[in-house]
Amino acid sequence: MKTSTEINSIACQTGWERALELVAEAGFDCWDFSMFAMGVYSWQTGKRVIKGHPLETRETAIPFAEKLRKIADSLGITCNQSHAPFPVVCPEIRELLPLALECTAIAGGDICVIHPDNNKTAEENAEMYRELLPVAHKLGVKIATENMWNWDNSNDCAAPAACSDGPSFKTHVDIVNDPFLVACVDIGHAEMKGLETDAASMIRELGPRVQALHLHDNDKWHDLHRLPFSRDIEFGPIVTALKDIGYDGVFTLESGLGAALEDIKSEDHAAGVKAMYLATRKLANMFETHS
Image 1 (cartoon, rainbow, N blue to C red):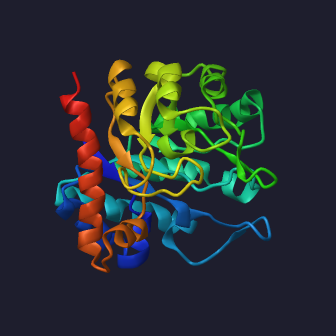
Image 2: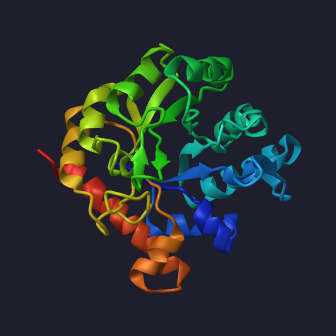
């Protein structure tokens, strides 16, 4: 079982080239091309914010992705998947999704995670995915939709959103009915209080649709994105469910470097990325040795 991690949180502290070096040095097999800098969103204004990152325009994003691919290849690690910018409710962000797919292909990724619109139905979200599928087919990159959540302030817990439970998630994939639309199960999102679901049940409901993962831990209430085994999620049943459905994708971590450094009480970037790897490797080992 190969392991991977998002690199955006690392790159924000070290730069992208050093982030890839640290990922390889720690022992990861792969990297997740997290393209949040492609479309930074202001939740205050509801608009895209331009910050001058190379990913923001096609003219600079393509050579940037090519550069990262070259560096990663030289380090012996491969891009397994990516994460497109969000939220897709913002038209300026949505316009960037074909570029995200193109950069994924250049980096060598097989899957690009593209959030659904939290507050739209499966059929409404299907319109977006159907628009993108010709691009995905041409590039040979699958699109993965992801289980999301809203927040209920009055009850101080998560509230339903697109794909937030097994039936909704399954419907979002099946209504499109295309092998290039698959499921990325976000383990932490599936374990949040208020959603009346859990990751193991969701995985079993989706079965072979599950072709990507976002691995992280939380207090089973908030979306904390902490290292696996550092909080309250029980990973044994999750590994069993993945084994039962015959999961053959990559174990991809979505817990940032900042969380790792806080957990190990260190400011050493290499030590933080190593902690990220060890937590992910522990999960992968559980999967490999599960009978």
